Image (cartoon, rainbow, N blue to C red):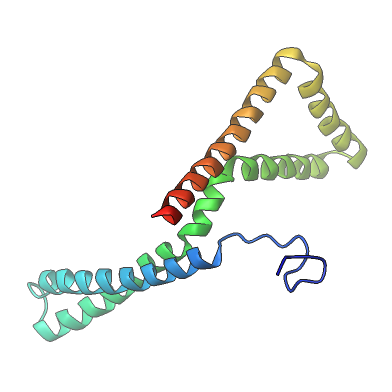
Length: 163
């Protein structure tokens, strides 16, 4: 069934992480939790047993293993989202910086003057040749970065589907 106007997904819905990828990372997070927890429990128990009674060292080691295992599992589980944020970090930084500069200007200047300053800044990027060429070159670097990422994702998917 095609996704049309009356499909179950809302129009314009964007999936940040595809469902199969998300499920795969859930399995990886469980495995990471078990491996890291058990390994850290054994290592910390061995170290703590030199300073504390064995039963107390085992309990402290177990608690430390669970905490470290949870941290690792959460990082593994969140990795697809962190990876997307990393890929879009330049655009996010530029947008947040523009909003922050406008916010600071609005606090220290009248609104019309703050908007004029922002407008003049944008106009200088467009009107001044060397600045315009620099910004244009950097914007194409960003576009190419995303194109390469999508191209390599397509290659990986095609090679994984063919085998």
